[in-house]
Image 1 (cartoon, one colour):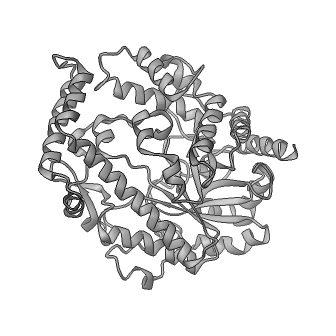
Image 2 (image 1 turned 30 degrees about the horizontal axis):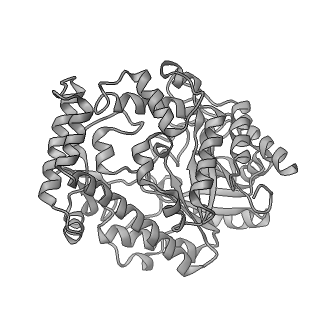
Image 3 (image 1 turned 120 degrees about the horizontal axis):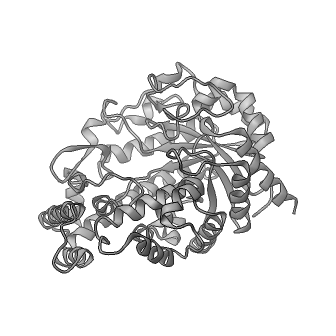
Length: 467
């Protein structure tokens, strides 16, 4: 599908960029520098990863406002919510107050259509607890405390996502929806088996009434699940202190899983809820307009965590979507992969020296020629990593849906870690295209991207399309 008519060439952007720089100017940049035909527009979120200006403490890019909006960022719906669609949910998200009355979908409608550019609305599962109705829908952790995430089995949460999709597709002339949900199940969260550094097994979720009711309906022993996760928490905290079980760290972990199969059952229950939300988002969009394209963002942990990979079968996901956006962020990927190795090396694989652990994991993932652990954050992951991951995705979906590559353009990394360059962005984009990617989405948000890097992606696209 490597041609200009069928390929999605998108740039992720938040509403603030169109206010700061003007709609026409931003669309000019997208078309002229990135060869883009699509705006992946963050329409709903309360998080700063996809919305707002540059993240606090990170150098501003060479365009847009150079003033931080950290103090007044709030989030919400950057379009205009229509109350009649939300009557079946207690969650009432207002129009985002950050940018006054600015309705980003209304502002983009005419200019995008005039340029024959598509608009894909990005919805992110990020919330503020003070939003009306949200506090009643929060997950409950192992210790009985309210979390800051929403339970995917709560009927009000399900109704909200259906309402948001229906409202947006019916009220605006948009081309598609992309759902961002980067949450892991309780087992991986307990182990810290991601690139996030905090490991706190007592905070695993969810044990609210709706989650418990679904578990009982499926015949899962709730008391045993709680007991299993409580013992897992004891094991993890002891491992973090270097208190080795008599038979070793991994055997201790495996023994817990054998004694309490409910641990895995509860983890799979989370995945069931997440996949049911995907099904409902897809159905809601298609019910309004069949040609609406529905896609899902596949988070980065899928790339370097074999445990997570096992729970995310591309062939299964492919029947729920028109396209999957596969995160292949190679610059920040080195830092993130290194964090993941150190996390799992501090618990269930603590008996394995970290370099050996990474070499084993590389074998499991079919990684080759990546930097050593102590150099990984500085070196990042290679363009060959991008190529292999997109080949894997193409093979995995079995032709049932499209796959587009999420390309890292200046995603913030720690001091001393790899930073994007135009040549790197060019190489990563080219690698994805050579792997047969059905599209490219420059990520995470335009307000943190350097123009030269955007141009690097555009150069790779133009060269490929010419061929």
